Length: 161
Image 1 (cartoon, rainbow, N blue to C red):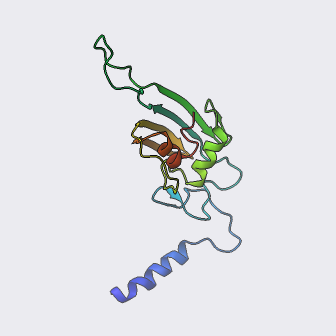
Image 2 (image 1 turned 45 degrees about the vertical axis):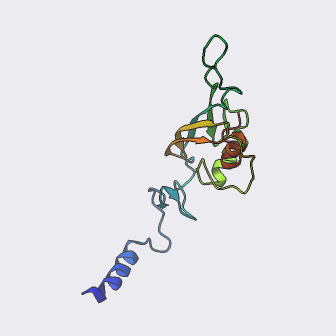
Image 3 (image 1 turned 90 degrees about the vertical axis):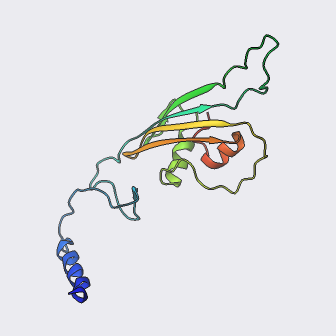
């Protein structure tokens, strides 16, 4: 029986495949790990691609000094900034929306990616968070980077605000 499994699987795939000249049917895009595979389209016809809307937050870098003030008070907490990024078309209140959307498209929606950029080994932590959807796929990302250089090298223009 196991020797017939590949033939049976091939037959099932051939029966399920559309015949020549048949009209395509709408359905979900082919995905691998949540990312569309090469040649897959999110919709059939002229329907728009799923929306991208992300709420991006950057906290830090920390104050230049961590020593308490003469009155004994701790330094102020790092400043937090939040913007909204929309893509297709690029918009929101992100000051570099087009570049940020291009970086997300190039990495297929991954916020963090490998980089060959060398940064100074200065510890001045920056925390970031991204929440929302990228092309209809949920995004929930949070990470601390050692400094602003590392943040820019690993995320491109996404958190450049």
